[in-house]
Length: 109
Length: 136
Image 1 (cartoon, rainbow over the protein chains, first blue to last red):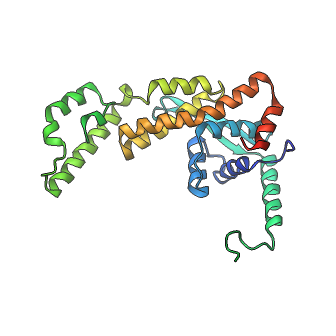
Image 2: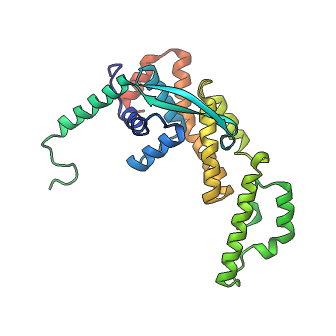
Image 3: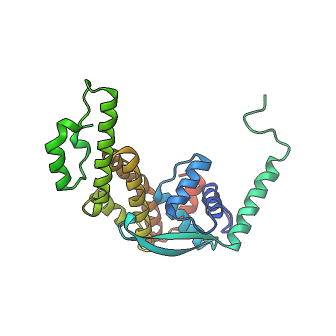
């Protein structure tokens, strides 16, 4: 896999980060993936994936203010970068191209 | 619900419950109206317990385990996220379930964090690639 390619799970996480428009952090990103993709994500898997995406230059992160609900710990807000948007767009268009003309899986008789 | 279902309440609240448990706990003979009143009372007790959570916290040993496993740069965010969600689960499902939920979340997170640490320590980038290809 080339360095700027996205794995399936990375694509899911990056999509959730994109949807949350820079206001996403661990809890909301997990919620977004669970709600929309119906897939449960462990906090460990999420953060290792975010770290990998950050190393690839697809996301950046910043620390918020500590809150009492979090035991005085800060949120880490994640934002998609231009390179991340391009990688996501490329990954999605490749998939669309492969699916073009193919009946939706599970509906063909 | 038994009193054991409320292990993270303050000492004052515990004393209050000990004194009033018979009138708060739900019995089979209670009418629907009385049951509703008792459920409301229990909800209030849980809310009060949550408000006094300066003395309360998620399971400490599991939290420590998570802190040990998580990378230094992100362990505050990881532990904070789980703690935030823990209190949400307390409100919706009760304390006992929230404690089990927390333990499960930590256990599920250990493998990805351990794998990441292993790869970092050994510097084995190729191992990550191989594991991804093998779908591990």
